[in-house]
Amino acid sequence: RLRRYGVDDVVVVEPRDVHVYKPLLSHVAGGTAPGHITTRPQGDVTPKGVEWIRDAATAVDPAASVVELASGRRLSYGQLVLCPGMHFAWSRVPGLAEVVSARQVVSNYELDLAVDASAALRDIREGTVVFVQPEGPGSCLGAGQKPMYQACAYWRATGVLDRLRVVLVVADEEVFGIPEIARELERKIAEYGIELRTATELARVDGAAKTVELATRGGGTEQLDYDVLCVEPPQVAPHWLASSGLAVPGDEKGWIEVDAETLRHPRFPDVWATGDAAGLPSDRSGGALRKQTAALAKNIAAVLRDEEPTSRYNGYTVCPFTVSRGTVVLAEYDHRGRLKPTIPFWPAMYRENRASWIVDRHVFPWLYWHFILQGRI
Image (cartoon, rainbow, N blue to C red; front, side, top):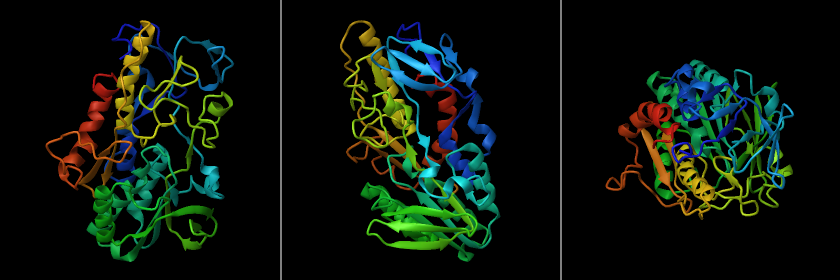
């Protein structure tokens, strides 16, 4: 977008050489997509005319307008866009970091763990499977539920669901914060016979004994044995943001302070933020990021022309819940919890349907690689 607006000096700092389309990882973990289709070489998706520096940011000095990199290199900037994503803080749960790479403790938040999750959920025939959704904010926080529904549909089709105990642990008071969406999810939870624990968090994992300790907001605890544990990791902003003085004052998770509409830092006008680490009131998601970047690019281009930034991000976000192996509950909403369907004349499109699954599984990935990454939609 910036290149098309005439900005001719754009640098991307990205340490990884493989780009992952993360929304598909839930399909990988749920067994409805192979892992290899989620990736492309980073060089192939970096726009023409943009310099890619394969390095990692480790600090920002906003007073000097300098970014420090892991290699020791220092980059000066005229305008800085911070989009470092989440840091997966596995160690926040005692015992979790030590066992998360084991076949029985998996996740749909990293590619290798999603591949392991697919195999573990496919092969289990009896026992207890525990799925955990932590306290937010998180990157598409409800995504931890997606492989669970797909696995339950598979277990039912193969005749083993009644031999499995499936437990969903959600840190929030409800399975989802919007009543219309919550009703759809609760219907599927009841249909599959899932045991739901709300206002409950994963407090400890004992990998040797294969047990978890759950803690409720009221102070109670529960211990569960597990055969497979599928965990959405606790998530925080990268630690170097707080030490750079760019985080929301007093926020222990370190989210970047940013104006919710213009995406500009309120104390450093040459700094902008977008994506999962931005301290925005809207839920984090790829759909939210797409809307944010549209406003962000226009605003930066305006500032470079010595104009005021007038484009606004409206708080839109989206979470497609794959509630079976062929249907989706499509949650589209804004930061106030109001439903915001992409197709206004289909106001009930949030209800479970096949069309949304086709879009989520097949159409969105194609659009992502060919249009969204190119800033064309």
